[in-house]
Length: 222
Ligand code: ADP
Ligand code: ADP
Image (cartoon, rainbow, N blue to C red):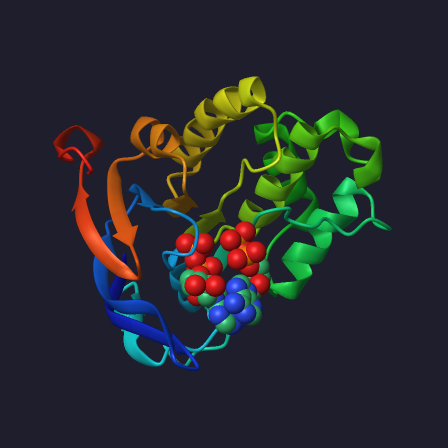
C-alpha cells in the first residue's frame, strides 16, 4: 500500500534521513519510533509531499507519487498541535477538508458519519476554542478521515495531552483506525506508545532505519 524506497534527505550539509526503505501493508498500523531529531518528521513530510526528498521514492497503491502534489496523494494528516481553523465551527472545519480534497459525494453524510465516529456529533456547531484538548484532537482525526484517504499519517498526534488522556486516546485511535480500515503510519518518540499501538514498528536513529518488526519481535534497544 505504502512503500518508501531509499529515501534520503539533506538539509544543506545535514543528513536528516539516510537511505531509508520500508513498506506498510494495506490496513496496517505502523509506527516510526526514535528520539527527537532522528528524521521521523522528515520521513513523514516526504510521504505527504510537504518536503522534497533529496533522493529515493514514495509509492502509494503501487504508483510512484514522488512528483505528485500533496493534495493529489489522497492522504489524511494529523500533525502535532494540528490546527483547526479557529474562526470555523467543527462542521465547517470538516466541510473545508472535503472541499480541499474535491471529495465527490454527500458532504452532510460524510460529516455526520465521521463526527459520529469520534463521538462529537453534538459539538458540530462549536468553535475549536470551546472544546477541550482531547475533543480538539478528535476533531482533527475526523477532519483527516472525512474524505476517506488511502493513507493516514499521524505525527505525534497525542503530544500536549495529559498522561491519562494519552492512554485512553491510544485505544480510541486504534479502534477508529480498525473501523475505517485505513493504512496508517504513526510517528512517536514514546516507546510504550509505539509498542502498545502498532502492528509494526520501524525504529529510526540518526537518520537511519535500525530495526523493523512486530512489537513482540523487536530486540532490546541499547
Ligand atoms: P519536532 O517537535 O518534531 O522535533 P521541530 O521543533 O524539530 O519539530 O521542528 C519544527 C519545524 O521546524 C519543522 O517544520 C522542522 O522542519 C523545522 N526545523 C527543525 N529543525 C530545524 C533546523 N535545524 N533548521 C530549520 N528548521 C528546522
Ligand atoms: P524528528 O521528527 O525525528 O524529531 P526531524 O525529521 O524533525 O526529526 O529532524 C531530523 C534532523 O533534521 C534534525 O537534526 C533537525 O534539526 C533537522 N531538520 C529538520 N527540519 C529541518 C529544516 N527545515 N532545516 C534544517 N534542518 C532541519
